[in-house]
Length: 227
Image (cartoon, rainbow, N blue to C red; front, side):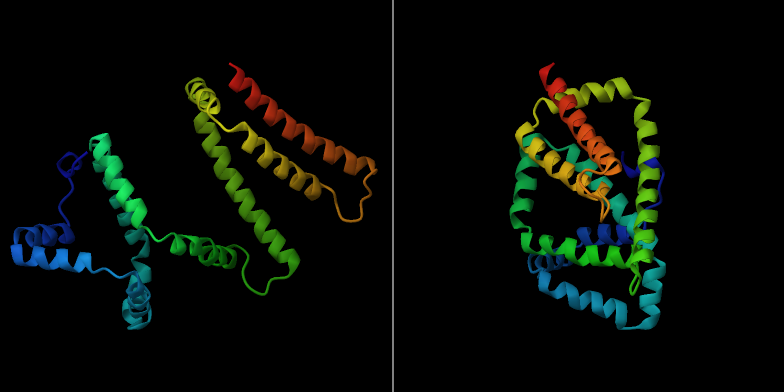
């Protein structure tokens, strides 16, 4: 879907970019700058944007939702355009992109944004009870979203079930079984309250429920693969 189909007035960035592309000297300058991009310079740019001028940083935060939406639309349009490329060319382009990405920086994302998410969800200097309540609230919110998603999936149940059935046949069930076993052991440990004895009836009931749920998932996948 192109811009004319959506009846969107070209923005300032697009108009400037068109003028730059139409000007050979400016275009060559941009290409030279793109070839000389250094990831190490990114932290300095962010620090300058955030703390160089309070007015700019506050305006930046105020415009952040629109910037995120702009970035999402940019990525969506990039995907639409890439979908129009021939498959060999697409694989070659994405292969070159993948080999050039610094995996070390990617590994830092969980730690950095995990800490940020923890501060947003739980907060700092919280008591164990407050932290637990915050986590439960976040989980319940995620479950509400999951419930809405599954209700939408239910409308196309037969088509989705067929796709899942075909996909499950190609799954590595050995890896799946190991992963489910670990999850099951974690669930058993979670439902067994501290101080409960292994033989307690309540603890045994919870443990049995977790084991049955785990076995049910494995049986379903085996049946799907056997079709």
